[in-house]
Image 1 (cartoon, rainbow, N blue to C red):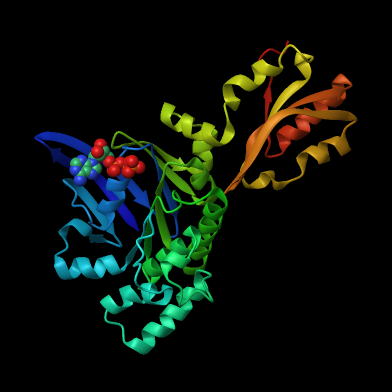
Image 2: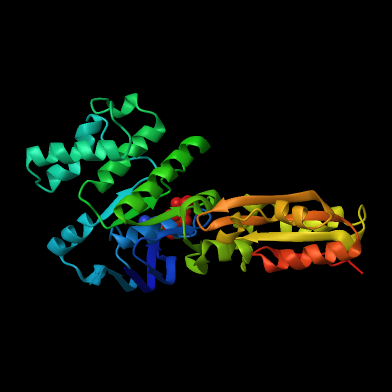
Length: 341
Ligand SMILES: Nc1ncnc2c1ncn2[C@@H]1O[C@H](COP(=O)(O)OP(=O)(O)OP(=O)(O)O)[C@@H](O)[C@H]1O
């Protein structure tokens, strides 16, 4: 649906070139919730603004639904932009207009007749959960409600693509979750493709199916969210995964080794959809062993759980071996303690 080929954006500031976006190539499929994550200055905002041509690319090609965005003239660009909604960090509401009139604004610009406008506003108010707030002014709304207005307005002209520029960064964690839930519902209900930029791995974990990691204008890593969680390659990606999982990879074995019989320590990795099976209780029922969970963290992603538990198994040697063999036949991956004899 969206194909981005070798796109760069160079700003010139006081005679110095700044490569805000540097040779980025990505493919975004219809129905994706695609996350672009990076620290401040990585080039995320510039990148997302290239997609609806709030900025012109210096080089490269951006095709949305087969149309080359950079080649469009004024009228074509206006039409293309109606297919691309945008949600902003600071909501971009019109303070002197009520909720209903804020949402009606893009419909007025698109010259939709009044009765159709009113009908559409009603639908959108329902969709974003603002029933009862139609006549309120933005100053009377919470941050989350203001962002719901922003989302309704972005959806007014039935776009195919929704761009979200740090849409939850100004919100508290609970409100963030409710807005992410709304975005996910909209993605499912309307089949809308969503591209969001963020500096929080939590946002990626919660709703994205794919992620690109940006650093110094470049995409340094890209893939399915679970794969990136499981096997982050770049240092910057590892830091983002640590935002959620802590420093499990390096420290966990060390902190436990020494206190327990090393041969009986195992790390169970839970990755993806099938891990909804109740494997721990199942293995405890099947084999005469005890399972002591010593450490671990499991988190939920769009594609199921992700995380690991370090367990200490006690029982007869044969029973432990059989239990491990059973675990290996499930979707759980078993890692043997590197210090085991
Ligand atoms: N209009 C501009 N003129 C000159 N330089 C710019 C302009 N816009 C962005 N830049 C530079 O481009 C680089 C990328 O900025 P950008 O805002 O895209 O990053 P970001 O990842 O979105 O960061 P943040 O989350 O802090 O906004 C930065 O070095 C920034 O200073």
